[in-house]
Image (cartoon, rainbow over all chains, first blue to last red; front, side, top):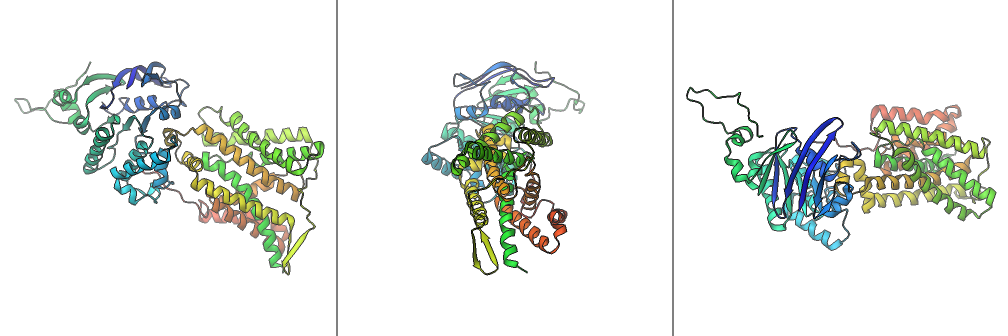
Length: 260
Length: 291
């Protein structure tokens, strides 16, 4: 469905992505994992072509293909119309629009009134709290509610591919598991393909069908999540599960891993 | 003291300020840029109307429609030529660009039409007056201003509140990145905002011109006062602008009656006071972004 082929993105003189390739297949939940500064958000922004203002042509090299069409030189609004929806990091709701207006903005590219109404019901079905708050300004919602609003709003364009950037950012563990469950439901019930960027590796690996690991702008592993969850290095560096202490009882803190 | 008369005249000039301030607010609402070229855009459009009337002798309503179309194009063109090519624009940079556009338009108008004052009249006989309550004389111009301002404000209120495009304009102002992600073509939104703003500005400009006289700098002072009225109303909401404009007109008129020397500056003093006490204007509501 989405094929990213050897893309390079530059922030002025710094190369943020060193030739990234990956594929998202129809109906899957695919997750991009990695530490801070690995380039995960940059990947999503490059796909949405939000880095256009930064430099004329981003990605500088490589191709992005969605449903068999090249999209790396299309404008953001065309990309949205093709069926990619993006939930940015840190929610980015419209603070002084009401919740309802926020949701309606999600359907900006659509004209079918009945379909929009159905989808709104669907969003309220996933997030009943939004129905109660629909007249409030979005800026008055709590962080978790804003995240729900951002996801609901993204669903309103009836996307084929939903890209989520750290939906767990700043939420309590309980809310995180709720949100992940809903993401999983959206994927299973509505058949929306999901590309998930996460730092919460544990949660992401629990729900994903396939995982890529990013480090310093390169993809270092591409595996099924079951395999990654059992991997010793992933366990230690991403999941925080300590290895057994050595015979003398010391932990070897200085150990570094190179995934290449 | 002729309270009724002062009230009517204050409200009429206030409506003029309000109308013009609306034009400022529309651009500010979508892009957070204060457009200092607003006055000169209105001045230029008024000159075009004057030119069509005095050189081609077209009937007024035809000239009016042609001017409206011209003003929309002017707004879109200025946005396209001056603001869009700016690389890495900051808000301050954009404001300075609008100052440049202002100088440019003023120079162009002086070159084309000269600096002397021209007579510009709406087809409203100012001598026709009504006196619904004794001591309260209303002329045609006043009625026209009040009616036009009310209609425009109502239309705009409905537009920003209930239409998809209007809400999209507010959304773009609040969060440009998120607006892009929604599939809103933000460039087109800016063009539209500039066209609409220029159109309303030109309407107000013609009222100002018919009240005083037409020359390349005639919009300087009305612009500053309208801008002050907009700041008073919070620079954000249409209702705020109406109240700001009305207050401005009334304060100015009443003070002008008692202390004529103070008339030109009293409004600004009031605004300084208001901004000292409520820096975001009287009617602004702003949320601090949550993370």
